[in-house]
Image (cartoon, rainbow, N blue to C red):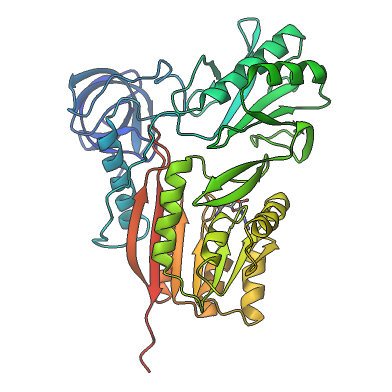
Length: 458
Ligand code: SAH
């Protein structure tokens, strides 16, 4: 029997919102049928205009709030409903933390099939404004000018911006200088549909000490290089590195594989938990520096490493967690696929006087099974994969290695819950799940999970 869909496109409905979707939208049930409404908060009655229906759900556009939530606030950002970056601009911070905790709980229940898991309170970010140390601004021709901005939600439509409340002021200074350069010297913006034009993106990193790296991404050769360098060095306080990156591919990935340092140094230094790390344009670094210290401290506390332990830090990036673990462990092995990150990791180990950490440049799903087959039996495994989570070969190798402690750091509750299920089915027990807010105002949440394996009863 076909389900009756009680709404159709262009209907205006009134709806009670009782939950949050994974993208930060309010979720309600209209005559039992699920409707997602971006900008609505749980506990509210809202008016929504239906813009899309599918077999299982509808999408409504918020057109009015009949009874507002006590957590509703006026967005601080003028681009709040336009830009795709911060979907929780209308929600007070305390409630954002609660939403994130429920998001994690939901993933563990629904995707992981765990019952009654205790989820810690989301750990708040010390900074909720200008907390990011990295910005990526796409370029486009808008109103006859080249503009750098941010994309609208789920789209590549550019929203030009004058400021962004979560970015460092130096990132905005870089954006303004590059915009001026492009417009003054007739540099064209890359057009995705026509596959023409040059300037694609500007990526900016700002360290805690205020050092700035600007990476200019173009489709090909960089014209007017000297003028660009002059504008950036004159207008951006703390600029230490200007990189030209070529990305000629037809892809959503921001950076291509070709890097050239056109001014200053290849890396900028960042201090995390008392250690100094050199960071390249290509390398991954957590984006919220103060909260990163809390994240790593929590992860290491959970990992509970002692001086006889061998630790595998899988998906190690530039070795941030590895070097902190190395202070406590006998031996640390970091695995990471990006060559540049491994070069940085080795240099970072040397610069910090760490002698018991080694780094392998390989895909985790290839390296870890080989190491385990070769006899590696770690006392603790730390996992910090990208959003898609761990490859099954990694999880299988963990099980096979006999390791008893796994500390899993994740930026995606869905894949985290899926992977925890697999490990728990293989004998691990979920000990703790702690959400931590690295990304205020957005719907994203980081989580630290500890799993242990008890001795088998003989
Ligand atoms: N632990 C690090 C990095 C975490 S981000 C930190 O906290 O800074 C995830 C890292 O996994 C990135 O550096 C990415 O380059 C790497 N990565 C992604 N897929 C991988 C794979 N299949 N094998 C190994 N590393 C991978």
